[in-house]
Image: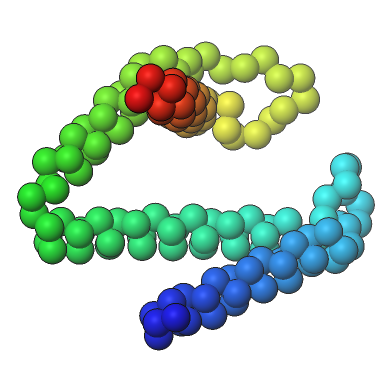
Length: 148
């Protein structure tokens, strides 16, 4: 085991430990008093921890992709094609989004506006397209192995 993998294992266990602590607080930390529905006290904390993990993973992915492009410039075309495909998926998903405000009984919040509704639809349609692509890739891989 190299020094780097030892450090990465330590970081992994620390992240898992912090996540377990937040999960324990969320499930066993009590509930907000006088709330209309059951609401754990530490909901905001676990959501913020999830945001931190997501932003950290995205930043590390972005940094390592740039480092990879610098170290291996001959792979730049594949990276640019991948980015272009993701951009096309985002544009298609955005164009499929519907901004018609929903008729929600009793909802008085500020998120029932066209911009938020289109953004939500864009995220959903993007995930549907990417999930379908992943399933098709798995199916293609398995079927192509049969004929080899």
